[in-house]
Length: 199
Ligand code: ZN
Image 1 (cartoon, rainbow, N blue to C red):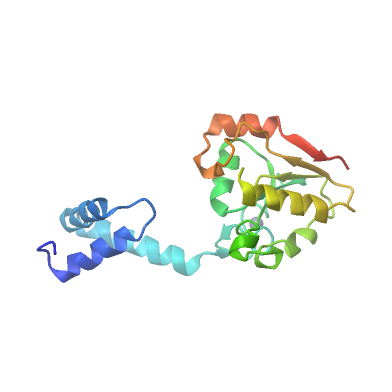
Image 2 (image 1 turned 180 degrees about the horizontal axis):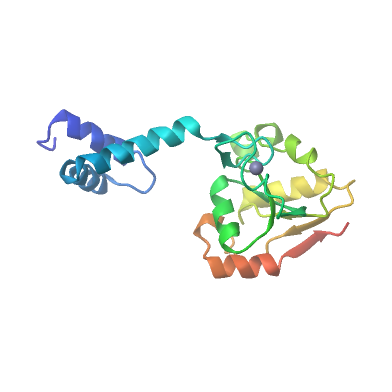
């Protein structure tokens, strides 16, 4: 019991469901909401519901998008000969910051036989349909067992295609999730990427 009314308790409960937010931080955020300007809070609430209602997955790369095709896939300035395969949309933010100019493909996770996650649970099929003008696939899955398993699976799957397959250099810490990698490391890892298989 916090001695607070149930309405505020519900706000605390909602905040505490976010990743990395403990009970104390959730309380602090909820009490901040009570003190903040009402219009600011209403705008915040609207931006959340708006995002949840309007955002869909891009039909090509499976990134978040407001349209059927996202702004990256529909950008004629991007290099269509390279596709960078990532696990989650969050990973794209890093590559954009690192100045990457090719296209992306979001798998929606990584292979994990122990958790029962197979290729059919990921956006693998749709990658095959995008390879017409592609010369290189950069596999940028996380540097852990699942990410490595996925990279191996993809490179085997693409064995008959005349496409160069590369993987990020090991500047990314082993076992590490890409989202915790700093920009400089990612830029280096991207430029020093290792060849898995030449075309
Ligand atoms: Zn897209």
